[in-house]
Every structure is written in C-alpha cells, then in structure tokens.
Image (tube, rainbow, N blue to C red):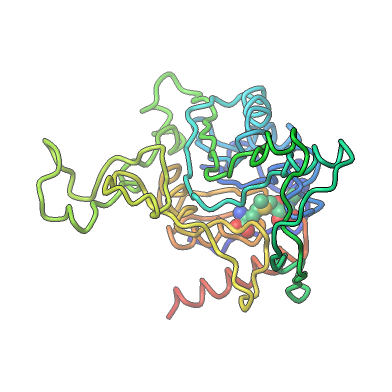
Length: 325
Ligand SMILES: C[S@@+](CC[C@H](N)C(=O)[O-])C[C@H]1O[C@@H](n2cnc3c(N)ncnc32)[C@H](O)[C@@H]1O
C-alpha cells in the first residue's frame, strides 16, 4: 500500500487520473442543501460532469458508493445513470440523530392575521458550531416561548413542514463490465464484484458461540443494505452499527460533515479488495482516506478547500504514524 495521493484542487476533469485505472469510487459530495450556510454545499447537487469523469477513470465493472440526501438523491441518481453507470442499490444509513428543521406555522398564521401570539414562558436559545476554524461561536439569549392566539392559529398548533431527518441514502453504482462475463472481467481488471466477505457483519456478542441459521458463516452475516445506528436497540442485530460523528470542540477537525471512519471502512470493504485503488473526488477532511489506510487500500483524493485539505493531510499523517508504531 502506498501513501495516499491528495490534490488540493477542484475534482472536475479528474485530470491527474488515467482512463480505466481506479478500482472503486467512495465519495460524500456536497448534498446541495446549504448545510450551516456553507458555500460549497449551496444551490445544487454536484455537476453531472464529475460522474462522467468518474466513469472514465473507473475500471470496467468497478463499483462506487455515493452519499446523498433523500429529497435530492433523485437528481444525483439521474446524473449518475445518464453518465453510463448502472444503479445497483441504495444503502440506507440510519443514524437517528439529525436535527428537525421545521417552522411553527401556527405562529406564522397569527402573524399573517395581524394577531399577536401569546407568551407561554421563556427559554435559553443556544446556537453554536465551530465555523471554518474560527473559535466556536455560540449565540445565547433568553427568548419567549409563544403559543398561537388566533382561532385558526390554535387549530394548526403543533403543525410543521418537515420530518426529523434520521437516515442518509448511499447510492451503490457500477460501471458496466467490458468482458463477456463477470469472471473474465475480474481476471482482466480485478473488478466486477462486491467484496461480500470483507464486508460481513459480525454476530452480536449474545449470538457468538450459538448456532445462527442453517449454515452459519464463521465471520458473520452477508452485509445488508441497512446500516444502522445502535440506538435502534431492538435485539435484531442483523445490520451494521455506526454512530454518527459528534463534533468535538477540542479536536482540530472542524469539518462540518465528517463521516464516521467505521462507516467509510465498511463501504470501502464492500466495493474494493486489499491493495486496490480507491478514489474520493470530494474528500473533505479525509475520512475516506483514513478508512482506505485502515483497510489497506491505495487512495487518491481531491479537496478544493485548502483548510479542509490541510486537515486531511494532518489526519492521514497521524493515522500512518500510528500504523508504523
Ligand atoms: C460533504 S463534504 C465531505 C466530508 C467528508 N466525507 C469528511 O468526512 O470530512 C464535501 C467536500 O467537497 C468539497 N468540494 C466541493 N466541491 C468540490 C470540488 N469541485 N472539488 C473538490 N472538492 C470539492 C467541499 O469543500 C467539502 O469539503
């Protein structure tokens, strides 16, 4: 395994990469939601060009996983399909801890009708996250809690516009094979299949040592397309368990959308084999790169923002040093 190759520039064109040279694509592009008002996430999903570029550089039969968001994923999927990929599946990462974003429409109705809503207590309003490397900022103020006063406002009390987002879709894609069958494609390129064995889900502690099913596999279950957060404590441990990253103020990585290393490792395991080459065109703070090191894959990543690029490099250096110890 060689040291990851990182480019601090826009990925569009993937100009440093030769045709048919990448084994797997693992990427978490901007969702296009304008998350926390970050410029790079505003306005639109990634340009279709990056999927055409990815198609060019992936080997025939190569798999990819692309993160997206429920209300915009259809646009990403159409671009990916129109670029020549096969849409194989959609994995479902249930993390359960998104922030609900909705408005209190009942109070808006009062406002529209020119009725002043009633005060119904007070609360501390706190907003805070670490923004672009600056000190953590927090807005803390006392605010009035209000309830609707108009008749119509009361009727719609408690209504809203959005559900709490608790899962993120991950689109599983494949560049079509070029040979007459999959075995021939694997022989020629080493691509064309998922690495089910490496992605197996270990049996839970309670299950270990017991007979599971008719023909239990020594490592664990075949990976499913639900990847879930452990708070779904229903004793039905058939799915991979991955908590969402909780940002910690004292760590140097302040990227706002860090993906869990365990999740990225699982995905890399599924779509590639040891020593193969994985590409992430939207690297952010380098979580895919770290997972590639852990899973002993080679890696190429692009990140256009210097501050996130520097964080990636620092994280990779720490990971490589730890591996050497
Ligand atoms: C969702 S974040 C990736 C976060 C990453 N998974 C992590 O764990 O840190 C997407 C990243 O893509 C970067 N980006 C946006 N447009 C880009 C482009 N054209 N080329 C390279 N990077 C880009 C943004 O700066 C952002 O850091």
